[in-house]
Length: 152
Image (tube, rainbow, N blue to C red; front, side, top):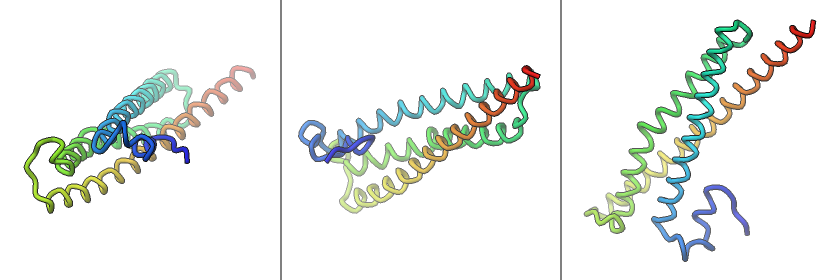
Protein backbone atom coordinates (compact mmCIF):
# COMPACT_ATOMS: atom_id res chain seq x y z
CA UNK A 1 0.00 0.00 0.00
CA UNK A 2 1.39 3.41 -0.97
CA UNK A 3 1.39 6.20 1.54
CA UNK A 4 1.90 9.89 0.97
CA UNK A 5 2.84 12.90 3.02
CA UNK A 6 4.21 12.62 6.52
CA UNK A 7 2.88 9.06 6.84
CA UNK A 8 5.53 7.91 4.37
CA UNK A 9 8.20 8.48 7.02
CA UNK A 10 6.48 5.95 9.26
CA UNK A 11 5.68 3.28 6.68
CA UNK A 12 6.94 -0.27 7.27
CA UNK A 13 8.72 -0.18 3.90
CA UNK A 14 11.03 2.60 5.13
CA UNK A 15 11.60 1.22 8.62
CA UNK A 16 14.81 -0.55 7.58
CA UNK A 17 16.44 2.67 6.37
CA UNK A 18 14.61 5.14 8.63
CA UNK A 19 14.00 3.45 12.00
CA UNK A 20 12.39 5.04 15.05
CA UNK A 21 13.09 7.74 16.24
CA UNK A 22 14.96 8.85 13.13
CA UNK A 23 11.72 8.80 11.15
CA UNK A 24 10.33 11.36 13.59
CA UNK A 25 13.46 13.47 13.25
CA UNK A 26 13.06 13.42 9.45
CA UNK A 27 9.37 14.33 9.73
CA UNK A 28 10.21 17.22 12.09
CA UNK A 29 12.72 18.49 9.51
CA UNK A 30 10.04 18.46 6.81
CA UNK A 31 7.52 20.12 9.11
CA UNK A 32 10.10 22.88 9.67
CA UNK A 33 10.22 23.41 5.90
CA UNK A 34 6.42 23.41 5.81
CA UNK A 35 6.36 26.07 8.55
CA UNK A 36 8.78 28.19 6.51
CA UNK A 37 6.36 27.87 3.58
CA UNK A 38 3.47 29.00 5.79
CA UNK A 39 5.49 32.00 7.02
CA UNK A 40 6.35 32.96 3.43
CA UNK A 41 2.68 32.74 2.39
CA UNK A 42 1.56 34.77 5.41
CA UNK A 43 4.24 37.40 4.70
CA UNK A 44 3.11 37.73 1.09
CA UNK A 45 -0.48 38.04 2.33
CA UNK A 46 0.45 40.81 4.77
CA UNK A 47 2.31 42.69 2.04
CA UNK A 48 -0.71 42.32 -0.26
CA UNK A 49 -3.00 43.62 2.47
CA UNK A 50 -0.76 46.62 3.11
CA UNK A 51 -0.63 47.43 -0.61
CA UNK A 52 -4.42 47.10 -0.76
CA UNK A 53 -4.77 49.52 2.16
CA UNK A 54 -2.36 51.98 0.59
CA UNK A 55 -4.11 51.91 -2.78
CA UNK A 56 -7.58 51.63 -1.20
CA UNK A 57 -8.57 48.82 -3.56
CA UNK A 58 -9.59 46.03 -1.22
CA UNK A 59 -13.18 45.65 -0.10
CA UNK A 60 -12.30 42.88 2.38
CA UNK A 61 -9.56 44.62 4.38
CA UNK A 62 -11.06 44.12 7.83
CA UNK A 63 -11.74 40.43 7.18
CA UNK A 64 -8.27 39.92 5.74
CA UNK A 65 -6.60 41.70 8.65
CA UNK A 66 -8.58 39.62 11.14
CA UNK A 67 -7.81 36.42 9.24
CA UNK A 68 -4.09 37.22 8.92
CA UNK A 69 -3.89 38.03 12.62
CA UNK A 70 -5.09 34.53 13.46
CA UNK A 71 -2.93 32.89 10.81
CA UNK A 72 0.16 34.59 12.23
CA UNK A 73 -0.97 33.76 15.77
CA UNK A 74 -1.32 30.04 14.92
CA UNK A 75 2.07 30.01 13.17
CA UNK A 76 3.65 31.75 16.16
CA UNK A 77 2.08 29.44 18.74
CA UNK A 78 3.13 26.42 16.70
CA UNK A 79 6.68 27.65 16.19
CA UNK A 80 7.38 29.19 19.58
CA UNK A 81 5.36 27.02 21.95
CA UNK A 82 4.27 23.68 20.45
CA UNK A 83 7.42 22.79 18.51
CA UNK A 84 9.86 23.15 21.45
CA UNK A 85 7.51 21.17 23.71
CA UNK A 86 7.10 18.49 21.03
CA UNK A 87 10.88 18.29 20.61
CA UNK A 88 11.30 17.88 24.36
CA UNK A 89 8.61 15.19 24.54
CA UNK A 90 10.07 13.38 21.51
CA UNK A 91 13.50 13.31 23.11
CA UNK A 92 12.09 12.02 26.39
CA UNK A 93 9.94 9.45 24.57
CA UNK A 94 13.11 8.09 22.94
CA UNK A 95 15.43 8.80 25.87
CA UNK A 96 17.64 5.81 25.10
CA UNK A 97 18.35 7.08 21.58
CA UNK A 98 19.20 10.55 22.90
CA UNK A 99 21.15 9.04 25.81
CA UNK A 100 18.91 10.62 28.43
CA UNK A 101 18.01 9.09 31.77
CA UNK A 102 14.26 8.48 31.96
CA UNK A 103 11.97 6.01 33.66
CA UNK A 104 9.50 3.93 31.64
CA UNK A 105 6.67 5.96 33.21
CA UNK A 106 8.29 9.24 32.12
CA UNK A 107 8.72 7.84 28.60
CA UNK A 108 5.06 6.79 28.51
CA UNK A 109 3.93 10.20 29.75
CA UNK A 110 6.14 11.90 27.17
CA UNK A 111 4.60 9.72 24.46
CA UNK A 112 1.09 10.81 25.49
CA UNK A 113 2.10 14.49 25.67
CA UNK A 114 3.78 14.24 22.27
CA UNK A 115 0.67 12.69 20.74
CA UNK A 116 -1.55 15.46 22.14
CA UNK A 117 0.79 18.24 21.04
CA UNK A 118 1.24 16.66 17.61
CA UNK A 119 -2.53 16.54 17.16
CA UNK A 120 -2.86 20.21 18.16
CA UNK A 121 -0.01 21.12 15.84
CA UNK A 122 -1.60 19.36 12.87
CA UNK A 123 -4.98 21.00 13.57
CA UNK A 124 -3.18 24.36 13.67
CA UNK A 125 -1.44 23.58 10.37
CA UNK A 126 -4.79 22.74 8.79
CA UNK A 127 -6.37 25.95 10.09
CA UNK A 128 -3.44 28.00 8.76
CA UNK A 129 -3.77 26.40 5.33
CA UNK A 130 -7.53 26.97 5.26
CA UNK A 131 -6.97 30.57 6.34
CA UNK A 132 -4.39 31.12 3.62
CA UNK A 133 -6.77 29.71 1.00
CA UNK A 134 -9.56 32.01 2.22
CA UNK A 135 -7.15 34.95 2.11
CA UNK A 136 -6.20 34.00 -1.45
CA UNK A 137 -9.91 34.02 -2.37
CA UNK A 138 -10.26 37.52 -0.85
CA UNK A 139 -7.28 38.70 -2.93
CA UNK A 140 -8.70 37.05 -6.04
CA UNK A 141 -12.08 38.74 -5.56
CA UNK A 142 -10.38 42.10 -4.98
CA UNK A 143 -8.36 41.71 -8.19
CA UNK A 144 -11.48 40.70 -10.14
CA UNK A 145 -13.42 43.67 -8.78
CA UNK A 146 -10.52 46.01 -9.59
CA UNK A 147 -10.37 44.67 -13.15
CA UNK A 148 -14.14 45.25 -13.55
CA UNK A 149 -13.86 48.82 -12.27
CA UNK A 150 -10.99 49.59 -14.61
CA UNK A 151 -12.92 48.08 -17.53
CA UNK A 152 -15.92 50.38 -16.96
